[in-house]
Length: 103
Image (cartoon, rainbow, N blue to C red):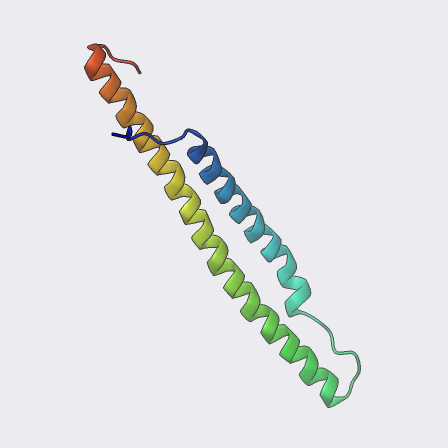
């Protein structure tokens, strides 16, 4: 029978996933101005429409990126919580077997 433990690296991985997601959210916020406020290349109607289309597409991609990064942050937090729960259960089970409080 395999032991029901979790590698302690799982919490570190979860933390790294969350950190990367939060960094990507900050980067997306920084890129927002550049992507959504592009000035038209000229005064003609085509340039204005192209700039508006670029800004609209940029805003849509930023929204998609934000949703994905928020989901990654939630997944990273879940990994960390699961690792903590397993670690706590392991400590409690070991304490019960040894008759002592380990934490």
